[in-house]
Image 1 (cartoon, rainbow, N blue to C red):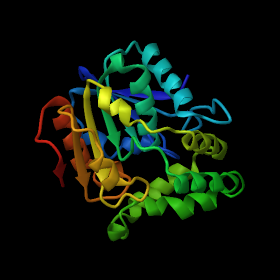
Image 2 (image 1 turned 30 degrees about the horizontal axis):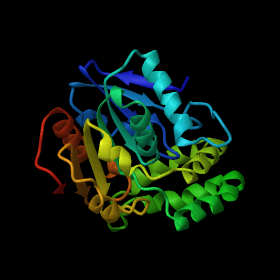
Image 3 (image 1 turned 90 degrees about the vertical axis):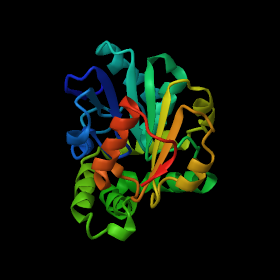
Length: 260
């Protein structure tokens, strides 16, 4: 069973899935701003935080099944599922297989698009350095995930992100990268899922092709998107705004496709 933490007594359960080289601590800046109507379920994904590695190649499908085990253990059958980056890929896998569990799906600085050939090649080239020089891999990559125009202001957040990433089991990270290479395009999930779909994206996100992703979202009334003036880590860069959007969209309603 994956490590998890439950918090709050709200009637609506919000399941939070962190991204690659993260863990359940990443939500601490956003948590105080989330509505008391939410009960939070934060999960450490396989090979991250205090959760064990489950395979040499942790596909999104394998990790989806582990998330479902937690929900079933906690007797949760109607939840709001939010995933950051890799957590978003797993959320899409969950939506594909278990749509009846979902009240809403939030792609939080993530994408339904598969990696292009260049991105896959980058991931494959990273295997050896993750295995042999993980600290170098972390320090070279993590700062680039933040808005380059606010690097000085975000220095403390970048340090936090580095600490979290460096605490990750490098073999867990390796297994997850291998799993991400195998990801397929999931646009069809968004085209067919009946629940509320929320997309939060960053103008300066170097890990996600924000413009392409937003432009190609299916034109459906249950899908809303927001583009924020930040990088890949809205939970650290814009925690208040992100929480306000989540509160309003999942518990109330706003006009479609806003830019902050």
